[in-house]
Image (tube, rainbow, N blue to C red; front, side, top):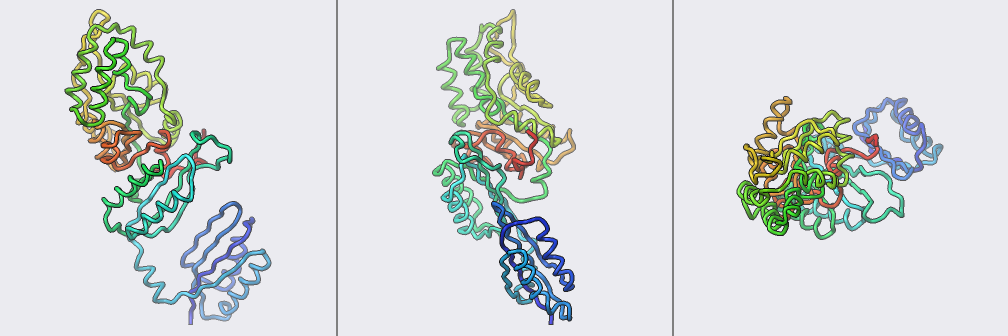
Length: 404
């Protein structure tokens, strides 16, 4: 009678170990039903689910594995599996899978406990846990660390909305980010990434900087804050703020442009997206003058932003239509996806304000980046802890995959 046995092997990893173990199994005519291997800090954990035939060769295979394990200084454990349990395991395949991604400056046991407890609470089973971030020296400054742990989970969440809400609450409490997304075919097959500019690609709201130069900084900043928080309609507030800039000399744009700082991780993100064959775009309610500077610096493919009307070297306080507002951003995302021959599931959108929500909602991966509370709650995913290159982790990208 055939046997089904789970073989677990643990010990110090060494070259040739897998070949040696599977060589013994091959001599016994064994069929492999499942296999998995992980190495953590040079310690191997190797599992093989096997079907051992009822034959002369098969009868001695477990004994031979024990001897080989002893020879290689490995611990070996055998667990019999009934055919009924095996068939039940086979029947569970095809169940939905999701990816839970923990982003943090430094990974702690408390963070992992929180994530794993919530997944269990909502009926999800963790199949795999992987570290996507690189190895960090012990003395890395707190604000320079980058930690990412990815959980592959299986099952149907009992209440997906409540699950997301609890992840968001715990993320705020622990000062981490927790992303929850379906592990679909499109997750690693995205090809278009679009970005808001102000407070996303750059660490400023340009219209506020222009307002300071025009002597109306406090008035404009107050309106900007309310618009980004979703308290005011973007189009109306944009026109109101722009009108306050009437008469501003365009020479000011040069000095402001020179002082703008890229957001942490922006250069890394765009370099890797380009290497991976992505098309990229700026879809901004800000101004073309500054977006073009970023395009040249980061190698961005498309730019759609607002054009300041200038007469005799002075801003008129009016933008040339069409204004890039919330709906225009979403429409542009659709147009670019169509132009590139892509489905919306293959797109990424990143932004921080309420006027980004429509494009975040229709993108395959919508990320609220260092966003206001309303935007974080409404977006599919949010990153506040790490820099822009944290988006790469949500694609399953590992630090060791990079070339920077």
